[in-house]
Image 1 (tube, rainbow, N blue to C red):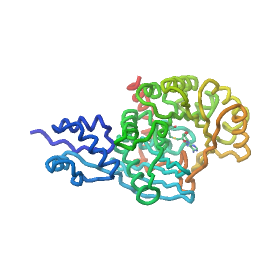
Image 2: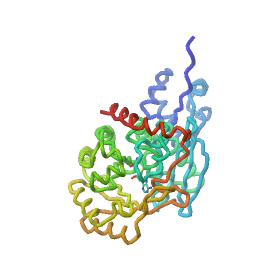
Image 3: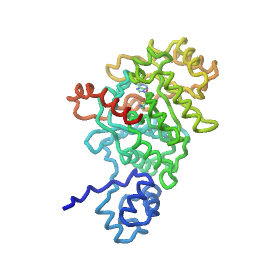
Image 4: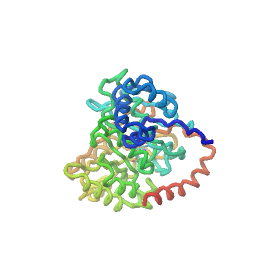
Length: 375
Ligand code: SAH
């Protein structure tokens, strides 16, 4: 006897996958866009309410598919308007999603993995270990959930921009992230333009190479230091893919996009580590030849991080040095730090912490295996 398979969650499936799903049910492919309109445009979460589907199709959908939304574990709102949601994942871990209202923009910072394997020394997510990839459903679920909440309670425009800067390394969960990007861009999905979606990477060079020709969204690279020796201490994956490789891959990606696009270079300033004026000048020198904007992030502290945020004076001097050398340089406002929603403060609640030591031992293997699959 054939076991009935698990119902499939249709939220987050890109259009091509939905077309395949409907074809396998013996239905026309245009059902895919009909369904997407119900989910993403009309906010409907129940097959029975989809009135352009026959009763028979609705009944079949109820048995073979679901429209599972994320489960909210908690929600905090910062004094500056930032909202942080803690969301439960399939395997009972928790991830975080942050909405950052900023004038005309409603940016949603989403997670791509539960925890992170990369273990950057100044990031609290890495300290929690790693517990797996999110599916496209879980990635898009974050956007859909926040978008519905915004529209219902706070802002009828909903989510206008999405950044993959929450927990995890998006390029180590390549396929699910790209599937989610397809839904974000699709006119029957969220209809966001390529410039309003940003993938941020700690420097997974094979992933950047794979982006070429596959996508055209904005790229941000977490550089944080002008030299390999300092960067390797902060971002261990630099030992495998040094700065020169990262810049070359980023530049190649840009060249696939055409005119008037640039890479965002993220640089978290840590006192006495990477915040001297010499560092600023070295950074400027290093980035000559890469079309970029620099985004300075004052370090966001967390317990026993061992790093400090530089003074305002130091931060401004660093910024001014770069501006004087011709770089568009923004200072990222620290948002939501009263609710621990700022960059690098997202930790979710990665379960099973007792196994952290083991996980750390297997971390190297996980990275190797993922990278091998990519090359
Ligand atoms: N893995 C991806 C995306 C997640 S982190 C990446 O590394 O780009 C998003 C940004 O926040 C990265 O630039 C990261 O380096 C930065 N960040 C991490 N911890 C931080 C902290 N404690 N203070 C300030 N920025 C931090």
